[in-house]
Amino acid sequence: APRQADIVGHGARGYKLISFLNRRSGLSASEFQYHYENGHGPLVRSTEIFAQSLKTYRQHYCDPDEEFNLATGQPELFIDGSSELHFVSENAFMKCFHWEGYADSIGADEDRFLTKPTMRFMVREKIVIG
Image (tube, rainbow, N blue to C red; front, side, top):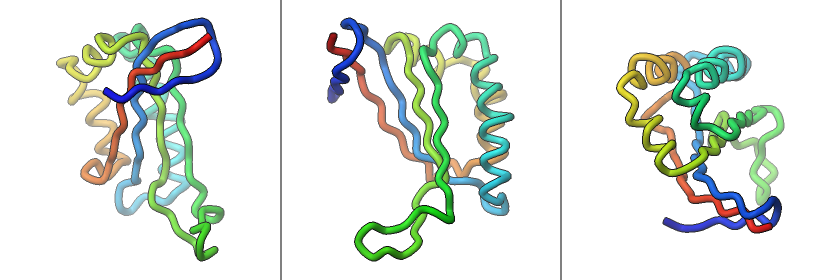
């Protein structure tokens, strides 16, 4: 897998998932953001296997009123948000997404607010150079 180097820290290693998200049809941007922050985020953090496996979980939102094409200056929104999940190891990452309860809990919640066929992911080993 491709490597990423962050020039901070003290030689720590980990595994990072970056996801690019689109809201489900019929949800406003504010409804998407509210559920993502107040429903999905707490669900992920409170799920035992994720709580044990994650170093950090970051959510990012796109503001439809402020996103624009740099070349044309025209409004343009490709995604509604993104997330970064930093796992303690590749093994921890694999355990979380192969966990037998994923589809019925986190996966079911994703169906409530995301358009899953449009989701895109990047998975990288993260090497922190001290």
